[in-house]
Image (cartoon, rainbow, N blue to C red; front, side):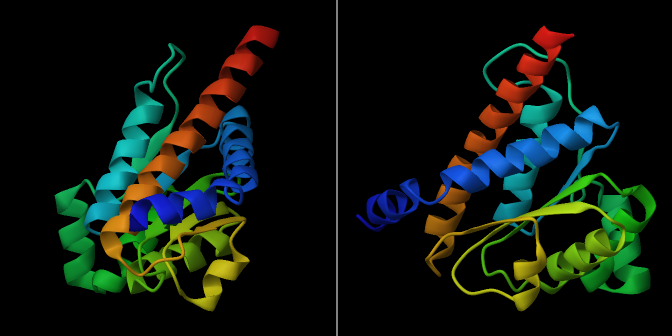
Length: 185
């Protein structure tokens, strides 16, 4: 019941955010940029799933799109965590991989994960666009992001379920825009 109520509450609010996220991602790709994605635990899995949809395809055939998940390289994550602290595992990778014009997709069910917040700070400092998916609450830093989707719940599983629906909707937006651009060229 909670999931249905949350989904109904979000239905009228999330559309413009999904559309803007799709625009930012495709603008980045069109300009030679890429998407970097991060999160912890289930949010890391969601980030990885989203990147897989971009690199592969979701439902329609199109070119592979440049995207990287920052949690999937255990050597990088453990070396950075060991040498710089876990709070910097994503930020340090953004320092090496992120460029102005790229997009960071940051996912945090609480909106307060220190390593995700540090990644957002680093991305903003590098001139990247930032899309954040979070649950109820969160850090004031989230307000500085280009696109913010807040799920009004502190129930982690409900937040993650709705984050996946939002990510699929964003991927559909990206697919539509990429295919439209391909048809024009």
